[in-house]
Length: 281
Image (cartoon, rainbow, N blue to C red):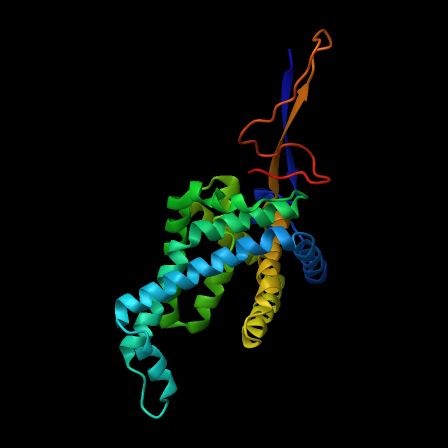
């Protein structure tokens, strides 16, 4: 008869260290590691990125069409810059942006989980793009709360909205990896990010600059810069809060004549990384 033993391994930081600021974010090292992970997992991760982009563009288009009726109204408004753009068009764009961020949040969470797998040495599969659906309700609630706070603060101090988007950036990962509630994840993310706000701002500023440059170049570079963004986010999270891996080891009984090792259907970690091992969170 086989026996199984389960051990938990923490990779990186911890919640206590994150809240106390006892972690290090070296901009050069993080960007270098993220770049290597992006190249290493390019073939597996890029299709998931493209699916997320397609979903978000579809939601954005549908939301605009529902509000404006004819999408050409938007194009004509910006093509003719001689006359002022109607306020309703800006409101429609805002609501469309709000809609795609909220509705696609569970898939966004899935990509964050896949990037965390890469940051701990495991491969992923395209089917893992549905993993975030298990956290749909808390992820959407956290995203809603974050967006509402950002929108409200932008009316008072525009820069405050950017600050909130930065300090709330790891709430979704805390929900999926630490199983935190939406409000608690936002609070913990804010407290931890405030401890290292300058290197954090530098990292995200660099990556966002790369993303905007990719968009300016007809969007071709997004297949590199978006995976880079997710890997930077995952590495920062690992260094701040740590990622807990559950290792399940199966030991065969010497008296048994035959031995078959079967893996659980939904383990946290199947076995230590190497070769073509796949992380199945």
